[in-house]
Image 1 (cartoon, rainbow, N blue to C red):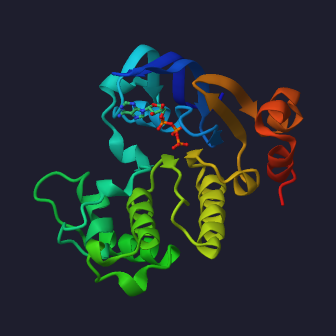
Image 2: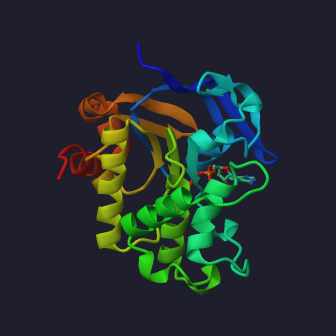
Length: 250
Ligand SMILES: Nc1ncnc2c1ncn2[C@@H]1O[C@H](COP(=O)(O)OP(=O)(O)OP(=O)(O)O)[C@@H](O)[C@H]1O
């Protein structure tokens, strides 16, 4: 029986303005690659933020690696890329390599120092994401797409067991986007890393996702990719054209 990495039971989330997520029950197993889709404002970011303890859970329950999110502390097992890049302080005087290294430092006890092995890990991920040439630049000097790659590198440098990515390709050019998806697919397959990916990039997600979650405040679909493609409910909601683009696995 595969390990359960994420579980939610009748999860509800509210902001001051009211309830935005209702009755979400999902089970994500080790090695799953879950595409989270739905219209703007449907609660996708709220769901992943709730898992990360960044949005309040108003009802129901959620757990990570079998531990309730409220008590979860093994954050090193999770690589998280938030949707808003403004979390990256543009005047923070750190270079690209230092920012990626922070992903490793944050898990160490004092004295916090990068070892030679850590540095080779940073170098390897910079290379994978094609940002070696900007390694000495300050974060504030980068374009939005470059910043996104740096944050991705920081999320990946710890070799996480679970990757939670909220619209990770929004600022990437088409070539980098393709490279990103293929890298995620490879990490998922070869290292059995579980992936939760929020996206509007329906053309690309179909190539890789093993499960789909369609949200619109409520959970309108959660299941295997193949079931998603056969679902006439999803054709009606999602549009036959988008469903075809996704399911044809171009
Ligand atoms: N901090 C907040 N305070 C109040 N309401 C919020 C907050 N964050 C999000 N919302 C509201 O919650 C709802 C869900 O937002 P959320 O960002 O989770 O949707 P989403 O599916 O990720 O949207 P998008 O595809 O546009 O990124 C929206 O109606 C949004 O206005």
